[in-house]
Image (cartoon, rainbow, N blue to C red; front, side):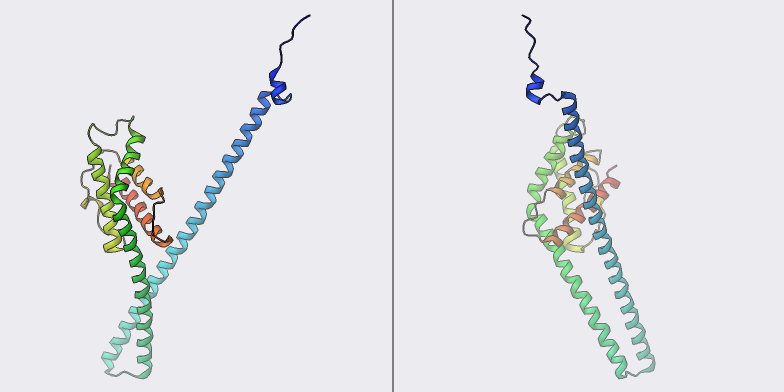
Length: 234
């Protein structure tokens, strides 16, 4: 009597071929991966639309402010020339000043959010420098980007970069200072490790007491820093 070998694939997979099953599994994985990519793409589109709206609103407010200052200047020049102030002119002046106060108040609130973002950065800076530097060093340790004994200076470079972010947020409310005023000669010749470290900080979600607006101001300034590193550290 001949002993036929047991076909375990039929027992385990119910008669389906391994190739067919693996092919089906591969298709399933690809489908899931495609869905994830589509979701990320949609999220990026929504984020871009939101940023476009914010930019357009900022431009609109700037135009309105400039127009009101021009109106006020013309009105005051007419009053100076005619040496008279009628009730209509007085109403217009009050209206313009009221609008300008509202704009100033709104900008002051926004600037306070920038300052809160800066204070959180300052509070977390020491820990962030260590963690972001470790992330970059671990990622590129086999690519000879880091000379022997360069870790300390690399961390100092990251610290100086974050000082630029702090000053841009807390003092100016926008990226006013050149980055090379804070770090003129980076220890690492390539910008890649620095960008990796700052990306880590942007994506670490360590935002503590910051609200959404304050978190966004911080992340936008980190994005600005990444762009400047990419341009300046070459």
